[in-house]
Image 1 (cartoon, one colour):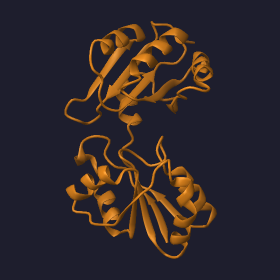
Image 2 (cartoon, helix red, strand yellow; image 1 turned 30 degrees about the horizontal axis):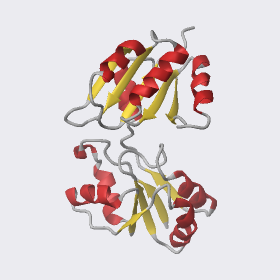
Image 3 (cartoon, rainbow, N blue to C red; image 1 turned 60 degrees about the vertical axis):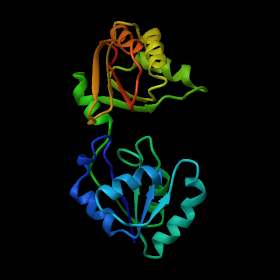
Image 4 (tube, rainbow, N blue to C red; image 1 turned 180 degrees about the vertical axis):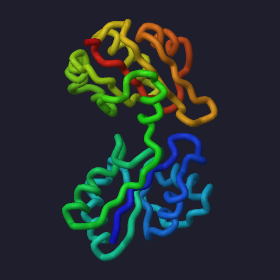
Length: 223
């Protein structure tokens, strides 16, 4: 019995690791955030392992049954649409319960969107804080205000539809001269990283239709 967490490419399918493919071929079951998205990857690499839907809307209802299957000897891998399971994606709950049950858990090294975005930003990355997605409504203003005191580089995930709003909110709380980097479509054909002050980057994205998953890297409060 073993639970694997297998990172999948955040963009280019060629970023999949050899070992990741081997594990996905060898396990009894793959839990996928969206089976339609994952099936494209599986077909690309000739993986015919059975897929089962596993996402934020059903993970609480299915976790107990999955743990029982693991205890009975089933080997299971978890994948998300892109990146490493558990990083702003389903995975943590199953890992926690598997660990409690004494099941062997292994997360393979691999793609995570915030790492290349952080390095590409040119901002200090020796000390940083990963914030994931900020609250959409309740608690959002509190979360934004908390950023004003943060001295470390901050990494934030955002959807393309809310990027301009986020940049406007950040500008309002930390000032429009704060340095920021925004990466989108990481490792894809039309990947882009825009760097500059909040005012400059906001103006850039106001002039275009924003597509792709977004990683915002914001510099910390100057000492």
